[in-house]
Image 1: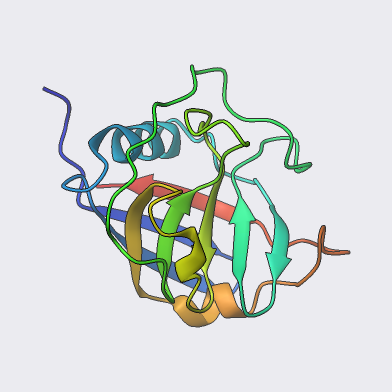
Image 2 (image 1 turned 120 degrees about the horizontal axis):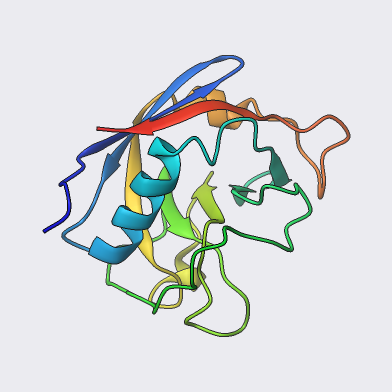
Length: 151
């Protein structure tokens, strides 16, 4: 049995974002995020797609939105958790089983994503730092994750 992680701390330039992990909803996705975070994979990675009123997406080491980690893609773990402000979910291609390392955090309600993307956590503090990320697809000077660790 893998370690049970409950919290993810993402340090941005403006401050810390605390995310409550939800292994009860998506155990494999939580394990992937936690493993990559604790390996330092996300350190220095930018938010390459930040759409006001929708979401901030990051997790691609190249910053292009086209890549992920060297680990195999994950099978979907779609769940009934609604995509609302502060929810953390996995990005993927049109293939439901293509989530890898990219994730997004909802700025606002995005219920049209429900049951189509895997929710794995929710921001419990520091959402103002996500709100402050530079906007764009990609932003001219993207915000980046300084460090990200799971406990």
